Amino acid sequence: MFSNKENVNILTALLVQHGITQAVVCPGSRNSPLVHNLCECKEIKCYPVTDERSAAFFALGVAMSTHSPVVVCVTSGSALLNVAPTVAEAYYQNLPLIVISADRPQQWIGQSDGQTMPQANALAPFVRKSVHLIEPKTKEEHWYCNRLVNEALIECKRFAYAPVHINVPISEPLFDYDVATLPTERHISATSVCNDNAAVADVVAMVRQAQRPLLIIGQEAWADMAEVKAELVRLRQRIVVIQDKLSDVTDTAPQLVDAAIAIAEDTEALRPDLIIYMGGTLVSKQCKQFLRSCTPTHSILIDPRGDIRDTFTNLTAVVQCQSDAFIKALANGLEDFATSKFYHDWQKALNDAATAAQSYVPAYSQMLAVRRFHTLLQQNNDAKALVYGNSSAVRLGNFCSSDYIFVNRGVNGIEGTLSTAVGMAAANKDKRVFCVIGDLSFFYDQNALWNSNLGDNLSILLLNNSGGGIFRQLSGLEKSAHRAAIMGAGASVTAEGVCQTHNIGYFSATNSEELESSLAAFLNIRNTSALLEVFTDSEEDAKAWSTFYKQLEKKQ
Image (cartoon, rainbow, N blue to C red; front, side, top):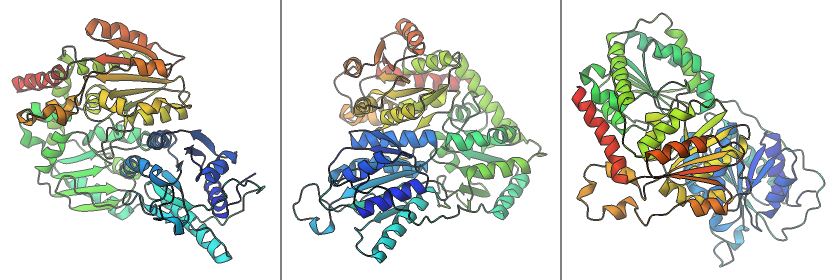
């Protein structure tokens, strides 16, 4: 039996008709009719999670894994605001998150009633569509409510994916469940964006005419890049293609672009006359700065939403097109394209950088830990997925990983990485999900482990240097007498107790010998979740990077 709230039933029916199959539900009384209906639907799998912030990032992990829309349902009041970091992340990653919030009736907003605040548009500007349903009393109001829900669900899925917000006021009484079946609602469909074939053909022609074309790809969904893996391999044999591991699914060694620019005999020879940029955020600040210093004849953004993003400050055109469609068109258009001196200059720089990195043996540090982790992981053929935290962790992943890495890079926040990994693990029982994360990110998000959906396929590599170690790599910050406060450094904390609380296997390392033995045991875990905590000194972590780049300078 379903709730007797008409707006709730309209919404539930349309979720089913639009093919929504996953929902993360949070506790509350005002949203209880919504949670009840979602759990009552046999077509929808529900994941109960208590903490709304963690729940939203959990939903993000499910969306990443399934590449399909996921609901996160919260109660009224400040519960809605707790999902805001995730919504911003989903917006910049083009991920399909459907936030459904229960609300008090409009007449009680601002009247000192419990858990009330203005909720309509509370998540703007990070949702593509925000709708505020009514409690319909007439046929026309029912039509309006139906239309709003259809519009929101369409906007979640059209063009590139995007988050949407559906706010649902619900009057008391809340707990009547006497409706036998959901209504058959009007289902509205809409076409996705039409790729501009003529504009794409023009770009392909520009590449053929250019002397120094460069394609740079920011963060892209694994599923989209896997679809064009063969085309990307072909393109890499024709033109310069720059990718970090947030889009690279070729299972090859990472491109060390920063090191290539640093080690190049003549950086002028690496400057393109045509830049084509697609995807989301790039990790490399140095690469962005280098391209911002270039003055190409054409700088073109390929964007599925047609947004104007002048990342390199030299944008000349935006072509609205799905990334995978463009890659296919470009690969087909360059079958007979001859490589240039520019191409070979870049390949030499990248190869020299890779050789330098392979011969570099860092002292005991986070760099050594992540490098050895990936070296040993390559010997394991089990199905896996890698989730990385931001800041130092993702940079180490880009330096060491041959695998694609999932990371909340849309807005680069430290919150939610662990919750995202737990969500991915719950949605991928056939894979072991590895989460590589720093201590600030881990302890900030440790509520992710307070979750009934936590299974036996999550492995966490915790890099603990007692604070935000990446700040030690920021030149000039050492001048501040308050650097420790800026870095977020504090008392040393260990995750051992957290693991005991949540029945997670615990390993640790404080030196190279312990690292080797603990990694071997950690990577041999099969039937339980586990955590390996690697304790390092943040100054030694920074020194590992600086020593590597000093060695590059000597090779010039």
